[in-house]
Length: 345
Ligand SMILES: NC(=O)c1ccc[n+]([C@@H]2O[C@H](COP(=O)([O-])OP(=O)(O)OC[C@H]3O[C@@H](n4cnc5c(N)ncnc54)[C@H](O)[C@@H]3O)[C@@H](O)[C@H]2O)c1
Image (cartoon, rainbow, N blue to C red; front, side, top):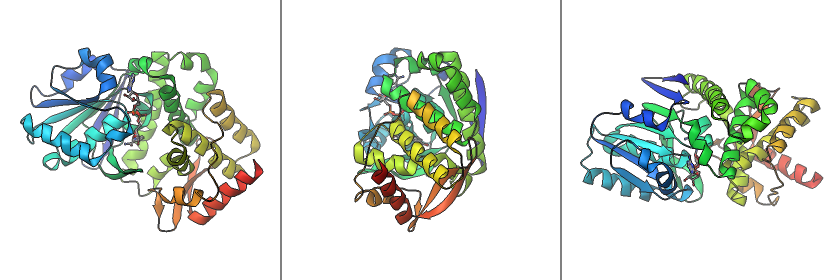
């Protein structure tokens, strides 16, 4: 079990990795607490929740909408929640994004915490203070930065995840290994069987490494004006694939990482051996397949990327495992690279 501090300007957030859902109650005030979760998580874990009223949302991306925030805010008022209120989101990235955004705008901001129940939210979504909802198909475009008081990453909860959700989280873990703590890659290569069996202790160790790395990045650049952009490795193409094909986030990011590693190799930043190591791992965990985007659509899909600034994208390349860097590349050039790759396939 580990406690990791995320220090940002004016706030401190604590991430408890390997703690169980039952530890939540002692981190909460005695009253004015409301829990937000989704129906799936409530059905499995509801009887172990702390003793406070629960608001449920429908599982999945469709709940990341402003009208859901409005509806929940109305319910908060009817429960008499005021500025001293506290919201706890128990669930995956969707529940965390919705809870964090609602808490950060309700009465100009009330306190909140998360119990992170998917691998993806444990290694990525629940740490870092980004909260938000989608606008139509454009993801996370309405949002803000506000840190949770605490995050509990209960790795035992990953036991009940559907296999595709688990693998999707592994992709973000691999991303952290590629751009940050390369020991994650070593462990994922060495302990394949235990990872696939979802060994809680091993997962606790891996999640803690990922959270520590993200915490160090976020502490340096909370608002994503520089260093934090490296966390978007694989996401430029990944978001385009996700938008076009509707595949799960992690699988789309895995393909985006493969393409970004390929481009890094083509430009001479990494050698074939490093490229093969990355793609070998992604393939071993069955994260990549062939999701080709029609060449005429790629520019439009990439242009939805929030990381775009004007006609350029902050594209994340690597100089080796654990060595990311950012280049500002014209959107046209990114689209051209994709079209060349497709031709070769
Ligand atoms: N804020 C950020 O920094 C950040 C970073 C990365 C991703 N995200 C967001 O996170 C979201 C994806 O998160 P996710 O992959 O956790 O998806 P999710 O929250 O939709 O959860 C995936 C599915 O698993 C179910 N589930 C959750 N926990 C479970 C458990 N323990 N056992 C069984 N089923 C469980 C959910 O009901 C859902 O059906 C996206 O909306 C993405 O934009 C946010």
